[in-house]
Length: 267
Image 1 (tube, rainbow, N blue to C red):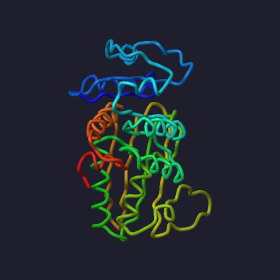
Image 2 (cartoon, rainbow, N blue to C red):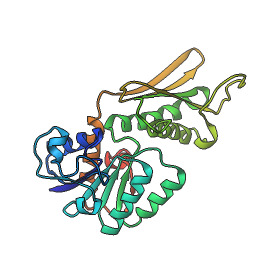
Image 3 (tube, one colour):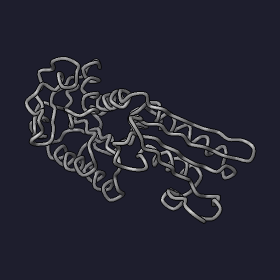
Image 4 (cartoon, helix red, strand yellow):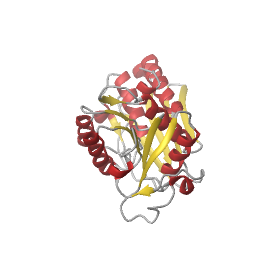
């Protein structure tokens, strides 16, 4: 039985993860954490998630939430995640990270902690999205430099980072397959007399509105033809299920930084 603790337990994503744990075989909710002073502290995490009584009360201390847990699932924000990662490293607990918006420096800090414990860090836990990453690599290698690449992503109006971590990873996958440096070729802004599109650039466009869970489309645009590889998330459940799957996969793994491509055996 894999015993899991969840951060942000009273939030939308936390609730879906708690529900996914309850529905998964061999998984057990062992801890639930919220920020100190949160109004839901002391409440049953399962009842707050809407999946029935769990016997686990939401607490305001990560250390307390991890007492009986093997692994932490964290979908918060980079600064919070890094603090939680330090606690996990100090306690020898594994961690699955679904937070997005890490800077290169924050990513390096996470990798330092991963030298002590096994960590799964992925911008998107969806099985479908990770299948898209593999398809994008193959498409880019086949099409080569003869096709322009544009990426468009859509999310709800509460999302704080832009472009999404998934869109960035898609751009990185394509750039790597084409032998380009993503940080050099990504183009986030086009306005006014910006000149013709360069051959190497990868356009990144962002849309925010309403309650869109997440949509990503990569366009390979050639002369007289266009290929589109798209993924549309209908709910947050697939992210939650992927995170729980990753938590189970981590059991017994050596210290190191992993992603969902490792979890799904796609590398």
